[in-house]
Length: 276
Image (cartoon, rainbow, N blue to C red; front, side, top):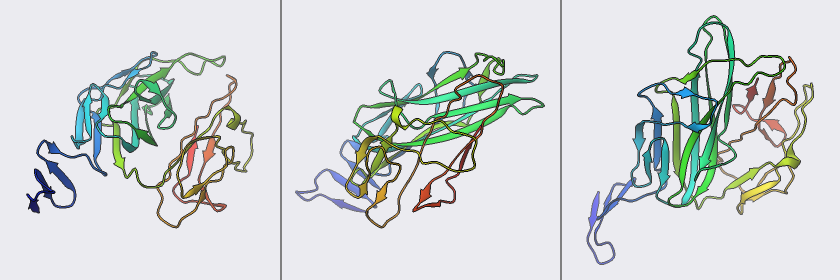
């Protein structure tokens, strides 16, 4: 709550410790966020991939983010935490099945992480599902971020996927972003074809390896192709992961995949994930 008009601080006003203004308006800073949601009307998910046209800004720091027709543009180069939350409703009668996917696109190109895939087997009113995924990305000023959707409707040899239109539930599909401290040590790893493996019917967990080191700052030790990330400093860490699984055949069988994070060989409570 001080106003500085000295030679070193001219034309700047500091209001507390969280918001900074200069003569042109708010200044982008760490912690700025946006929550962009679909609230006005349901939106049909088609067989052709398309942008989710989010229509309501729940909250936004205008110094860092701008938005239009479902696309978010960042004004400041930095590191961002992106949360992709999708809800879907079968919105039809009868017994039928549908698989729906959402993807994250940066500058019009598909990126790994922040991917969701949900399956609805509608019967007796069981016609909804929601999913949420996360990712940490280094963005440059002017980069655009959008969520895209796709309905998988082609029937396999077992004919299990048949379907009509699926619609989003208003006020439940959301794309959110938070600007992180880009000076904080960060480790971002990705898998490629060499990290793909077949899962067998077993109760034993196997390691997920990572061969692509997108960013490994000082403070982390990782060998390409290894599953282990060594933390070189004591502290609090934000950790998120995203995996995609696909059946190799269209046979009339069902598969459940379980995932979790381990810390020094012990599972971490709250990180367990189950996909069907």
